[in-house]
Length: 302
Ligand code: NAP
Image (tube, rainbow, N blue to C red):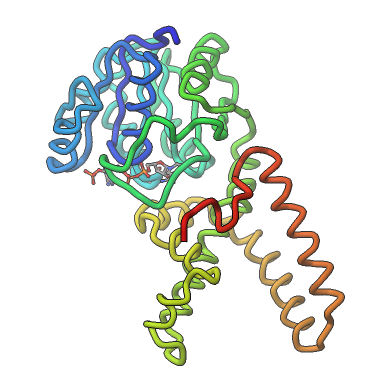
């Protein structure tokens, strides 16, 4: 694949940024990758792992001369970082982010974007429950969706940025920020909240001993625990910045849950069977779309 940007600056060096660095390298998409992170410890780890060509101490330093700058930090701090780097951005550069919510990022970052810099917010729908610079890998974005909310961004800059993500193996869809936030509330944010709740409930439920919860977790609980192990800072910020869509979907979820609760109480097997038949079809659709495997137990060994 041909080089797309001469210099890429990654702000924050966790799971997403380190995966972008590995993927950019693997596909030759960037002439130089410069990275920075908040803590000296993360910067040191990144230097040791060597996935950036240079690791520098400040965001302002990192963005100097970069053609592409990507904010890879929790959503709640993007505005402050945008303010810090704004005076140092190269005219004509693309400025992007990988935040899990889009309306809030646009409102926080947008006002700081200097004239002549192309702001193209984006969100890779790919991740794991791991975080930090050691967790990244080059294949993370392969055959995964990247949702972009470019608004009226410059067409040339947009084409270049799309090519960069396509080079890392992603499929791209453009949408409006509010629609993005609703889609993610359904597909990611509320499911995470439910997992957090279920794991919290099991933790509270002293009638089932801790030992049993762990021992029999393969019955379904284990998949909740994997999701509920995701980074607390990232997920706190997701719910603080996607409040409306999350509450809307949670309201719908609660209604459906009550309906199922009633069906169980009343012994309404038809309702349960019909409901579970419908959900099974959704699972089939996901497998057919290549977004998961139909191997038993999610393709994992036992
Ligand atoms: P991560 O592995 O936890 O890394 C976060 C990075 O941000 C670290 O380098 C951290 O620096 C830095 N950071 C944290 N708080 C900061 C602050 N207050 N000021 C400056 N820097 C700070 O996170 P990630 O999973 O890569 O997520 C990064 C972004 O991608 C988030 O906006 C998240 O919503 C989004 N995202 C995540 C996933 C996912 O599944 N993980 C998927 C799609 C999008 P230190 O290491 O020095 O603390």
